[in-house]
Image (tube, rainbow, N blue to C red):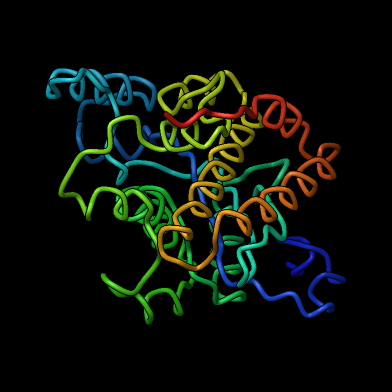
Length: 273
């Protein structure tokens, strides 16, 4: 697999542009065969029946009625990655293994790219979901993530913005990424939310799942930018310049990623009180 097949053009790399951050978001679906084997051995449940039963058990056990099955039983069906420079410029975007979106190849491309760029990963709830999903998938498929494991550190590892905003779980961030994105005038959730992904997958809407994933990844990038003002890395004027450059890049990529038109059309100006 060539580098050009995974991310930005060779020309941008030859120009000396360095990737310092990889902003990542993942979408997944439950593995019904695994659920049947682990949770319901000997009951001869079909994969679909095992998922339905596990979702019902999840609803019954949670006060909020959520039916999310633990990440340990999931496989990735969409991973989108943004390359970001040391000055926080958005350099490129990619939905891995498009348009086939094969789980094994998605995972292979992700860990290949993470190893190649040696960049800091940026996620929203990555420590609780995205990274365990991709680590377990690497285990499932026998894919090396050597550099990731050698460098893994609880305090100086990837940037998890959910951890960052909740003081590492000390408080609850009601509204999540959607709230933070909309607070900045970015689209946030539009027509799709995470609990719809499994039904979309069953309906064969794999491209739409990856479109949703890409929009979440972009929201994560813009939230990340604002946090860099809080850390003193950039100021409001620099953030505005970075956003202008990012919008221009997204506009230039509409032919490749048609969902970007909807994303930019849903951009608003949120008035601060």
